[in-house]
Image 1 (cartoon, helix red, strand yellow):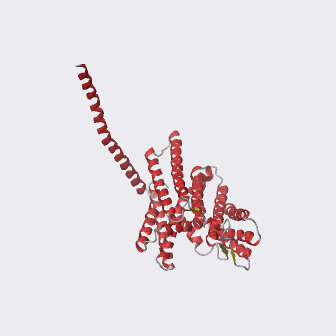
Image 2 (cartoon, rainbow, N blue to C red):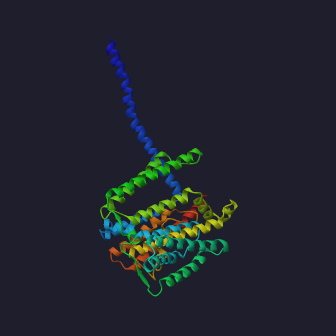
Amino acid sequence: MVNETRGGADTSRTEPAASDAGAGRPRRGRAAARIVEGRVAALRRKLSAGELGELPVVLVLAAVWIIFQSLNENFLSPRNLSNLSVDIVGTGLISVGIVFVLLLGELDLSVGSISGLAAAVFAVLNVNHGVPEWLAVIIAVLVGTVTGTVQGYSFARTRVPAFVVTLAGLLTWNGIMLSILGNNGTINLDENGLVARLTSYYFTDDAVAYGLAAAAALAVFLVLHQDGRRRKAVGMPHRSTGSVAVRTGGVAVIAFATAYVLNRFQGLPLALLVFLVVVAGLDVVLRHTHYGRQVYAVGGGVEAARRASLSVTRVRTAVLAVSGTMAAIGGLFLASRITSVSQTSGSGVLLLNAIAAAVIGGTSLFGGRGTTWTAVLGMLVIQSIASGMAITDTPAAVQFVITGGVLFAAVVIDSFSRGSQEAHGRA
């Protein structure tokens, strides 16, 4: 009897546990459903308030890829996507510098000329005068920094609009570039040299691309998690653990998919790696440093920034210096892509594409809103259109029309978004 009682008691104790386990699954399902409903509601609130984020440009990029893939099945091939990832780097780096200027609500029209000048300085020093490549690269980048600083200080001290100062710079730096190149016109770079290998070197080991993809996902998780802890500690709104996990998972999917595609061709391009590292580094500078907060503050309102005791002159000078530096680095990558520098370097549609990429990606023309990653998205759209046109043998004129239409749509969306935000008291 005792054993039967114990057995019965044991049974009676285990039955509720089984019932709880069965009930736990519906509860977990309801909790997951509430999380999804909450995120949908939050997305609706953001959209109604004009906070569109990167959604429009992501949809445009998806539409461009679907259209060109339907026209030519080679568009999304590993070879074409790998070439696309390298083609966006030169102009993309220049566009990242443009983002800093746009955050102030200004324009830098000199970046094309600065990129050509920096490339010319490097070529003349290295090829004509035998200066070591590493030293010539440093001098060329410093040329971009100095020219940007001069323009920034002139803009900040004279109160002349930045687009006027940089328009004068466009003409001045282009004239100096032509003078430096002289009558030779074109200087060919060493195809096995440091600069040439910036866009021709690939990490052929699959483990490199996958390892960096894992590192990128881990870095995103650590940054988001640490940011959430700091905000929670001071009582500020912060992302939930589920939100951090979703964002980290999204980055991981994109990173590993990219690594898989690149490994199917020649591996991870060095140029793309440098580009993403620079973009991520400058994104941290903008969003997680005192300097970055000052840039957003000045872009949000100059008078308010002055009343907050911010040095507007210093911020404006530094921003144009960043733009000049990035233009110089981008110019070296553009020279690397064609292994030469000529009197046409930095000209053509380079300036327009750099500005268009930043705006199409989501950086506001009104200042105060945007990130460095918007330049990446914008460049992907522009270069995808160019690549698709080339594959489908479409006239270049059509490319300009389509790019112009996308740019106009981006500006219209930006304008309506800002109006909606002002109506909701968020601008």
